[in-house]
Image (cartoon, rainbow, N blue to C red; front, side):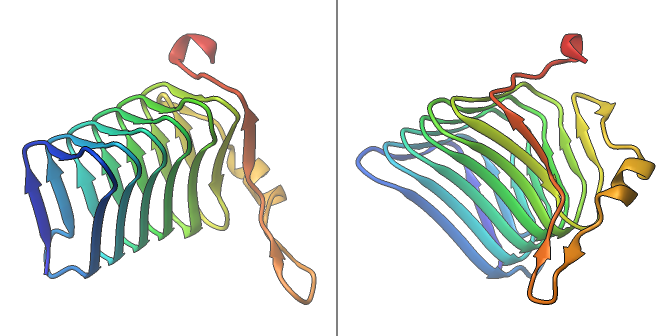
Length: 178
């Protein structure tokens, strides 16, 4: 099946939980704002997440897809942490992203590109990673050249992989800073 929400969805005293197993067509589509007094958790095993409104949470925001893309065109503001994760898929964020007092994490685990067009702000750390295959673009500026990516291939120590990633501490990016 698929999930489609239109208009504003509000959880005044708790969380917003949106979960989908395998999509039949569109995956999760939210055409409106998500506002939670605590957490916003959006997950899909196989299917895209498309959010055209703003996401606001008084605690954490987590959007996670195993196979599929995450596209957010509005602002994503969590008082604590903001995490956008895919295993196999692209992540595109066109609005501003803010983890006011916590960490902002945008990661593709296996393959996928990351494109952040809006400002990215965190109270603590910002981690942006394409762990195996993918490119990272911040505010339309290509920041990893192929030659550098080749040097950052995952290393297998016989037990597990250590993955390369970009790690930014307390950044706020915009075109004028690049």
